[in-house]
Image (spheres, rainbow, N blue to C red):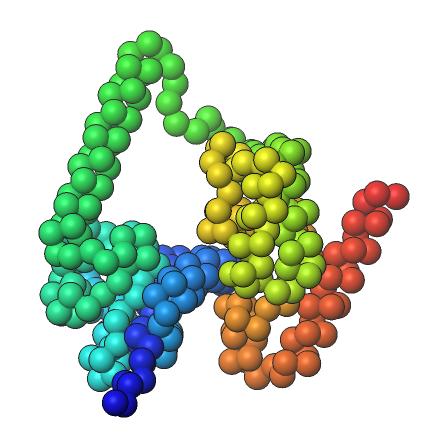
Length: 283
């Protein structure tokens, strides 16, 4: 008797950000890619193509990369995978794509969902958004009735206020013992952040659990939470740039004509500049 060879499930991913600033930083797209890679691996699948774009608009037909991703899925009998349901604005958009794909779509934050689940999820989300809007308006009206002045004060330097607020939050996050422990353990388990693989994040999670470390919100640190915490803490502790060939920044530089060696040198030079600047500040 001949055994049939098991073939991996094929996926095509679509990633989107809304603003050029998000697109230029690459952080939003990279975060979506990390989520997608994790779920493709968990489904024992293979990612055959990836489409990403920067788009803000009311018409999904304007999402040219989404249309390309859908066509590739149909041509290759693949599943369209999307990191988050919030890439669509409402239930109508989500169900439109669901119908066009014949249900062959995978949302990482709502895996294995059918049409009913998807409809219910978006309906609850839209209702919660409406309730939040109502509560906010009521609270602002009450404040105004009490004589409080609403809105931004005249001649307010928003850039300075924003910078101060970000600096304060980063300092608070940097001083939390759980964050220090997570950063230190991940650094050890990933060989100084050069091997950011799922098994290494799993090892870090086990080590942190054995140490009795929980997340900043008191949750048990699973490999998914450790991975998420690491990417968030890079903004707190990680001034240096980490060279990764699967990052959006790396792919963008390749598209601009840089070689792998040239990109590595750019990272080394930039990190050397960062370290020198830090030494000058300490002095």
